[in-house]
Every structure is written in C-alpha cells, then in structure tokens.
Length: 440
Image 1 (tube, rainbow, N blue to C red):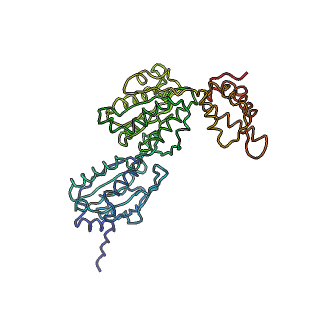
Image 2: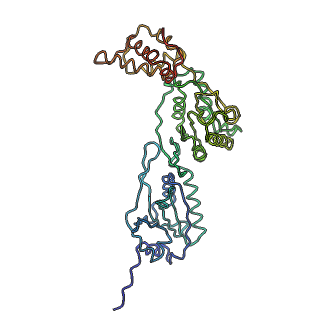
Image 3: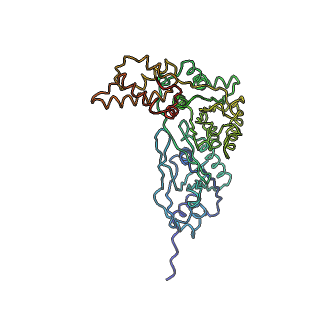
C-alpha cells in the first residue's frame, strides 16, 4: 500500500478556500501598534469588518513560535498552528467600562468585494516593548495597503479613549501604558473661591470651550494655557478637577510627578483626541529657572515649551498648570504669550470663604456654636485644607466625648485649633498651607 498523504492543516485549508488560490503566493502587509491602543484597534476593526466573515482562533503549539499569515500559508509551517477559541483580553475603558478585545485571531472577510484575511497578535512576547501586530493578506497588494491605512487612521482617532480621563506611564524601555481615572463630581458651590476669581477661571476655560466653534470662525486661536498659583492647600488642584468635570466633552490628561516626563506623548494623544485638557500639577518641579534645576529637568521643561509652541492655533488644547512657587518658574514658560495666557492666583480664603468652608466641611455634623465669628477671625491666613482638617479634628474630639450624633461645640473647635496651630507647630501649619500666627 502507498503512503497516506498528510492532511492539509485546517487554517491553511480555510485560507485556500477563502481566496480560491494558493495563499502562499499572495502579498502580506504588516503594521504595528502600541499595546495601549488595543481597544482603539479592536473598535476600528469591528467597525470596518462588522460581523462579516469568520473570526477564528489560532492556537500555537510551540510557545516560542509566532503566528503569521506567511506561516499559515505553507503546509510545513501551518502544521504548528491549530484552530481553536479566539483569545480575548478584557481591557479597561474610560468611565469604568470594559471591552473584550481580540488578543490573537484570524478574520476572513471581504473588502470592496475582494477576499481579505487579517491576523492580529501581540508582537515579540519576549521583547521589552511588546506591541500589537496586524497583518493583512489580499490578492492585490494595493488593496491590502489601502485597508491597513484605513485601520491605522481609525485606530489613531482613539474612539475608545475620547472623552475619558487619562494618565500616561512610561517604563525603562520607553514603553507607554494608559491608565483611566474617574473625576469626582464637583458642584460649583463646592469650589470656595471669591466669586470674581471663579468667574475669571470659568471665562477662560468653561465659557471659552462652549464658544470654541464661534471663536474659531472669528479667527481666534483655540490653544490656551492657564496657570493656577498660590500657597499649598488653597484649592489649585481642586479647581482643576472641577474644570475637568464641568467640561465632560473634553478628553483630560493628568500629569503629575514623574508623569510630567510623558509630556510629548500626552500632547500627541491630546492633539488627536481634541478638544483636550492637559492638567500639569506642580509644574515648578520641571519649570523652575534654568540655573536652579537639577540634572534632567531642563530636558522635560524644553519639551513642554516645544510642545506648547508647536501647536497650531486651531488646536483646541487647554493647558492647566499648577504651582506653589510662581516666583521660581522659568520666565520662558511664565512670561511668553501663547504659552500661558492667564495667571490666576488661588488665594487663601477670605472671611466669607472661610465661613463657607466651615459650612461645607461641616456637613453631617451638628453644630452648637456661640462664637463662629471669632473662629472665622482666628483662622485668618489659613488654607481650605487647614479648615477641612480643623473640622475633622473637632469631630474626633466631639465623638470621643459622648456617643450618638456628633455634636461639635466651640470648645471642640478651640481644642482642634490649638492642636493644629500650637501643638502641631510651624511644620504642621506649613503642610496644611496655613500662614496665620498661632492664637494667643
């Protein structure tokens, strides 16, 4: 009896049937995408291919092997792969949503009435910077290139990220990962600032954003920067978070601490996802005068300046920078028009604001106060953070005194004030942004 011929591998057989010819003779075009773009790539492919065609799982028999359309198109190499369940990854999206994205899969479909095959897989699994690899096979090379260009354009549109709150993290291999955040809902009456200061902030941000199209049509540039400065604890970051929650149509990028080194990547993504807001906290860490900087800070500062200069006037990007030390900011950042358009001081709360803060942070407590005016006077020069901590300590004193509802009286507030401003000493006051003198 003659030898039995080996069976054609299943995936090769399906490729041959789909194209009606030997797939080993067809061109394959490849594109690579960053790993963080998996949700955007998945949504782009879903929109372009829909439910048309077959989505097949690809099982690799050898963990060290990599799936490719070229290997699947030849009998000898195709034998290393089997058809199986489609491998999926549960990815996080903005707004605490989730999306199951294809990790490895082969789709057979038609585009412009012509058969196409695409394979999506992760890149070199042992590479320090693993990405995503997309291959497209078609009878006509130009058709495959055309389809890949559409995929690339749709992926870069970032639909999965648009309108979210993002931060970027880098690694030692220059890889980038994206994290999503949920901004707290902040009502306007929770932003305790003098009304004229708050209105000035809103005019340059919220109101401007609402009128962006009309302003653009009138030839006004849309890119803008605002610098919040003032002592620690006065509400600079809180005000920035309030603005982010007031403009939900904008994609928000949060950069603080070491994340400030990701400014180039953040601006590039923000440009694609505009209208966007970039919040850079404690910018004095990288924006101090050049002669005062530590090694490496200049490079980050120059990158920030270059990115702000390099934007087109119609780029709807809003930069919100915060600092406790406006006096040491690099003049090129703070003084040049087109980088920072408005510098707004977030001052320590005045008497009216201190009274409102006591009411705000006292929610949930029962007050029995006879000397509220005296307390407001004695807290002159303190920050919003100081008053919040004052109310917390007073509540602790009251809770330890008796069970039941927490009833805060003048003596509880006096004890808490003495603990913060006398026993705590200058360091505690500094940490809470207090510039006032301890009570006599």
